[in-house]
Length: 321
Image 1 (cartoon, helix red, strand yellow):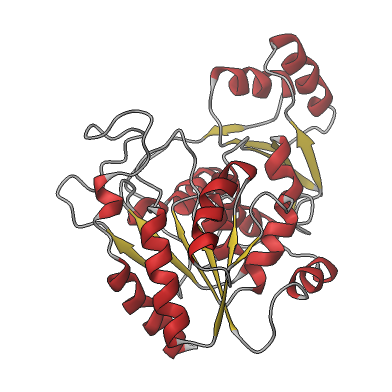
Image 2 (image 1 turned 180 degrees about the horizontal axis):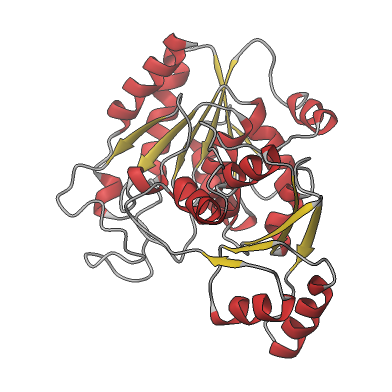
């Protein structure tokens, strides 16, 4: 008999990607999987072959949530895994009338991937979590993005941006420039940078110092960015969505961690590396830093991570390849 489950997680993108371990575990138990999410992450989920249907959450109005819940109720879900347990989503689950609903409870005792997975395991004890998360990349799109990179060079991607509403995740542009110079002096490498439209000014400052760096900031869709990340030999990033997307494509990641805990939100998988700030208050897991003004994202914890230490890990990763 067909078993059908609905997963609910609206964002952020990194969080949605971190639920793919749960998706794969459910598919191995032969569940049909629907997923309710926001517009941006839906562009990645649409390509995941294990997900049967992706539904968009487009309005916070309760009347629209009611209508969406009624629509979903026609699918007669055996289980809803509500990984976004707000009042609105609990209301939607009630209207969707599943046989069973399990709500996510955030815990800093686990990695986020394991925390999401544990929500499903409470309902289905036989679930088993893989060692890696994943997203599927369209091969034609990957080849298109690969054609824009130089051949026969080590391809290193910098993700210099971070969500402006969360401090302690963004490395200063001077450090990125120092690291880039050291890498290019030492290796036959191409460095390219990804980012959103709002990152362009910051990235341009980097390119003004090092013109050989290629920028894709503000020029690619989310699926194109994911394809680019899959083309890299190494992705270096703070704790942001692209870092987790990169880890889910199978690319080796080097995460820079200031305010955030690696044990909670490090790149998931066996081959990735991280470097954490050694400042006393790190990790604080706070959205804002008490030591700086609210409109600044250059935090002491991220300043504490020096380019020389990052280069040591880059050396280690390249030698292992």
